[in-house]
Structure formats: C-alpha cells, structure tokens
Length: 490
Ligand code: BG6
Image (spheres, rainbow, N blue to C red):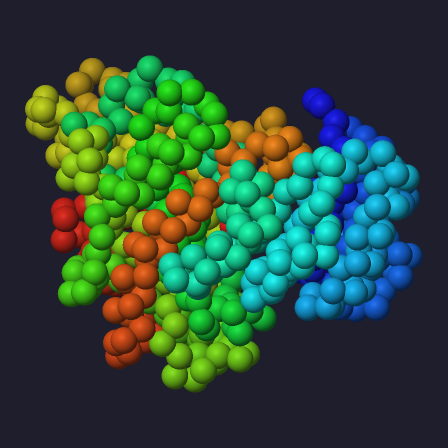
C-alpha cells in the first residue's frame, strides 16, 4: 500500500465524468491512504469558478456518490480551480504557474498527471499546448490519461495519436478503457492462468463457443450528439467488447509485465478474421430500439429521443461473430452482443464446452447439458460452473448443478470503482490495464470495415427491437445458424 505523490490536472473538471467517477474515486484513494498528503488536484474547464466553488462541487459529488463525509474538508482542500480556454496559451501559462506553486507547497517532486476528461475534439490541441507552454517540462514524471473515444475511425485515431506523441511518449500515454478496471474483467486472466482445470481445456478442442453479452437498460439519454455519430459499434465494440475478447483469447504471457500482456493481446487482434463487404451481413447484426417498456415503464424509441434524427440509421445494438484464426481458436466462434434499452443491465461471459464423446445417460434423459463456465462481470461479480451430476434416488439420472462463487460478500459496496483502480495504476506508472496504441489501431481497423458497410446501406428494418427485449431476432438467428443459442443463464 504505497502512497503516491503527484499533481493531477483534470481537463473537464466541471463535467459529468469528473463528478460521477473521478472525485469519488480520488476520495477513496485518499481515504485508503494511497494519496497521503502530498497530492494536489487542479481542475480546469470553461466556467469561471473559484477554488471554493470547485471544492463545494467536489464535496457534493463525493457525498452523492458515497454518502460519506469523514475527512472531506481536508480532502477538498487539495483541490484548486483554474478557468481555462483550451486554445489559448495564456490559459496554459496560468496553469503552469499554479502547478509550480502547488509543486512546492505539497512537495510533489514535479510529478504530473494530465487527465483529459472532456470533448475528444480537444485532446490533440491540449496535448500540443501542454508541451509548447511548458507544462510537460518537469523534473518528475509526466503522464497523460485520455478518455475514449480515441478517434472515430483508424484514420482519425492515427492522426490523434501522432499529435499526442509529439508531447508524450507511448509509455506516458494511458488510454482509458474502463472495462479493464472492472474487478471481474481483471479476473479473466487469473481464472484462466491460475487454474489447472481451465487452461488445458481453453482451446478449440474443448470449447465450442464463447458468448459475451453486455446489455444496458438505459437509452441514449442526453448523449445523442455524440452517439448519433458513434453508434454501438464504435461506442462499445471497438473498445470494451474487443478488449474482453482479447483477454479471453490471448496466449499466456511469459510474465505479468505490461509489455508481455499487451503484446499477447495485440496478437489476438492480429489474428482476428477481418469481416468486410458482403461478409458483414453474415457475421454481424445491427439493431435500433423502438418504443417498449423497461421495468414496466413505457419508453420512447431511439428515433424519438432528444437530438436524434427521426430517420436515424444509427445502431443501438450490435451482435457479431468473431473468428480468431490461430491454432488455439480455429473454428471456435466468439459471439458478442451489446445494446441499449435491453432487458437488463448486465455483462456476462459464457464459455460453452464441447459435448463429451458419448452420452451414457441418454435413456434416462434426453440430453446432457453442456458444461458452461459463466463469468459474471456486472452487476453480480463471480463465476458459475454448470455441471451434470446424479439425481438422488435409485436411477442413474442426471441433474444439472451449479457451482457458484460470488464476490458479493467480500466486496459489495466497497468494490473499488474501475476508475479508482485505473487512477491508482496510473499513479504507480502501471499501464497494463490501459490500451496500447497497437490495440487501438487494430481494433479500429477491424471495426472500420463493418461501419463502412453499415454507413453506406440504410437499414430498412430500423427500429427492429422493442425496448426491454434482448435485441432483434436476427441476433438469435446469427447464433442459431451455427447450431447454438444465446445462453440466458444466471
Ligand atoms: C461507455 C459507453 O464507454 O460505457 C456508454 O460510452 C456505456 O454508452 C458505458 O453506457 C457502459 O459502461 P458500464 O460500466 O456501465 O457497463
């Protein structure tokens, strides 16, 4: 439990992300003694706030999120605010001076983390100014945390990357994918590589298919300006879904270092079969929600949402079949599915094992259930193994049983937020759970080919699923045509 010393400069300090996630996470770290007294936060945004207004806001966000106020005044006293214009050098010079003052006041050793939690169109500009206005000239470390979206496609991502690389080295860039901060996503590796009964079976010989579902009940909310241009493919598949695929499919790294783990993930992306042109319709299904009901409450369809084009062609749901063309995974489909306004808020991975060579229990039972390993990412955290056992009684009848491990007891409300873990990793200089440029580039390359087809053909069937359902029928057919179905397991 080392404590860490740094200045953290947050761009977008008045925004939603900072308020909902960053301040409560920083407070947790503070309470756990991981920030000690040697830290300072500078918040910047356009609004002309004072330090006091900012601190009141920070306290409010911590109270709302955690309902806790012990030590809050002391915590908030480390926060400073500087109104900022992202395109104006003078603004940056003021920031630099304030950073210098706080550096001596809190003995920060010149360590600086710049956190870009704002509209992506300014990422590049800010990175440029940080260098040209001298903020990156410091004796300690300098690190850039950058929120998604990292570009809109490969081309724009390359441009952005080239721009920020002018001011920061690859090792200094921390591209956030908050799914990599989730406890059970981090657990995928451990479950696979620390258990004798998984790793030997973790390949095409014993696994028939893998299904990853990340469903949400929320609709587009107030984010249509962004979401209309993004859609579920860019918003969820390019990053979170593909990252989970990489962790499930990668080879064991030779050691648990950042470089080794990332390079194994990169190899998965390289082995991902490209899906393009006419193939897209065979491998991918898009959906858009219509009206329906969520938990008994009527909700509007996507096209009626605020700031959404009444004829919008944007997908709010994606299902896809991914093939990883390497020795381990030859022939094993990875099915992914994600969407808004679905039945439940849940992220789950189901690993379906192949049937055993011969079913001895056929006479008593029509069918044996396949073995399943379910990894519950959220809201429940845990794993479930589905097995077949003997029914009690005289006959040799089988009965499906579940072995359950739930993280609930030990964690529950104290489960560190993904953001807390990721902030702490960055303070420690550990970039393992952030995405390397190569991963970003390869996942855009994959996704671009699909969006190209979808953008050039209007879907005549939108809206094609009701709010509150599990998506369009075609998503079921996608799996059924391979002889499988989506497991709806608990
Ligand atoms: C974000 C997307 O990256 O992930 C959102 O932009 C989505 O559209 C969110 O709602 C889902 O994250 P979580 O942690 O709630 O599953």
